[in-house]
Image 1 (cartoon, rainbow, N blue to C red):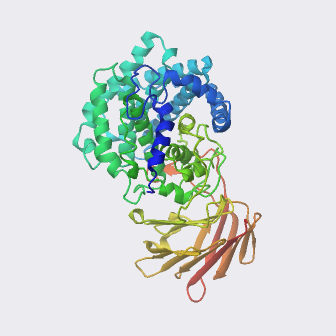
Image 2: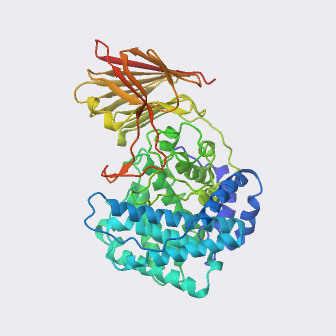
Image 3: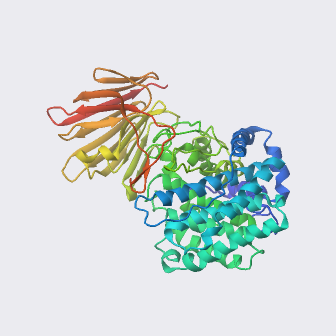
Amino acid sequence: MKKCFSRGLKLSLAATLLFWAGGSPGQTSGSLDHPRLYFTRSQLPQLRKMRERGLHRRIWLNLRDSAEECLTLSPRKAWIAPRSPDPNYENLYDRFYAIMRDLAVTEHLAFAYAFSGEARYGEATREWTLASCRAWKPELEGQPDGSKAYAVTRLLKGVAVGYDAAYDRFTPSEREEVRDLLSAIAKKYYDGYFTTPAIAGPGFHTHHATVEWSSFGITALALLNEVPDAKGWLEATVKEFEEHLLPSGLAADGAQVEGATFWASTMQYRIFFMDALRRVTGQDLFLRFQSSMNADLALASIASRGRGGYSQSHQNIILSPPYGQIDYYAPVLLFLAREYRRPICQYLGLWDESLGAIAPSRYVTPHGEKCLFELGGYAFVWADSTVPAKTESEKLSYYFPSVDEAYLRASWKANDLLLGVRKGELVIHSGGQPVLIDPVDWREPLGGVHIQRVEDNGSLASIHCTNASGQTLTIELNRPGRAVVRRRGKADWQWWCQGTPVRNGQEVRWKDKIRLRVVSGMIASWDPTGYTPKLSVGFGKLELADPAPMTFPCCTVHPSQSDEIVIEVKQNLR
């Protein structure tokens, strides 16, 4: 990762962090009052004043709109008990999404209250926090295990944030109720889960580990000096971060070995804990582990601006599912921009026009449990308008050998050509939409494709792939505005795209000056509504109830007599 600190920048960064750390950099804030996790009581007047102007006003307006929607929802009353057997993972996802939704609403209302001081948001935070404690209290009855921990630890985190941010809204007996629930579940999971060799050892270090340990650590920070065991829980979490989660949570090249979207959630939960840790205790892991906070995967894959709302796969971040689009990445980029003074992170993070809003998703179980993500309040506290939003000398091609993944950018302009390949899965994004998507479920004719090399001389960049049968896939980017895909093999090639293109013979055109042309081979079929994405989880066993299903054009191309398909994409955005 690019070195971000110079001697001059250290002083600038220290000044920037002074407000957010709640004291002098490197020293504890000295306050264990509430709120303490993401801001202190003394910072609230300044936070509320920041709503009036610039970037924070933009974020606040989105945050407020989502908070108003949250006020129309009702807190949960009934527990969803674990069920076994659960062959299609329906019960697992009902519980997981239910907790995600409950605590996303709780946290969002908590931030709305903190940033505004409005009693109605504070009262709603109190109600949702207590409702979660009461509805999910039966979690104390069962034994901890990995199938529960991913959801239960998020419950701990969300309740802790609600308790901390709206502390003054609870009565003394209600505070005791929340503390008792948090400490009892935390103790149960510490004794029966986090101290087991598999979870405390080096092998547990990727996405799930980060989410669970981070959430546990945030709970400890919220209870520090109030629950005796919290100090030991916090020490164990810091040790895990230092020894396993930060050194090994991402691959050496910056990729996430479980999939690109898990880069974003891994970074979210790292920052959730590390930001609160520094504010509460003064212990700073960001500088020491700067090289582990690599943003290259995000820089490589962001294609266009986003307005929030329901998203499709690859809509503005290629090779990522519907929930993992720019609203999922942008708050992380804003934090990295602030922390390491990285203008490129600020530049791309601001492409999210929904900053501050609660992030909806199309992931809904058959029983109606909907997954939600709360990042809006964090975007507000992590944003720093003093970081310039610009590109500098960043590279335009990226290769991640650890996950067999590569990207080629035409430029750093929004909507410009961007090509990505992961294990043979190909996406070309142009003019604001994916214009060619070769999905994994249709890839069997060229199965086992692997990247052999990535080349870039500035004007011409290419990704060369082969499979065990000797078939080849080559993607070329001729800057500034031409991409060529060469695919050798006897089988037809079926792909889909987004937008509203029109086919004319061997060409497909979009209104915004984008043209796709089959140069070698021929279009055998074109169906404007031929592909309907299906959302499923649990290794494909559980099909979800998509609230916004859509159909897209589907194209089948037959190879030439020489067993070759060549497709050219041209755009004129300049």
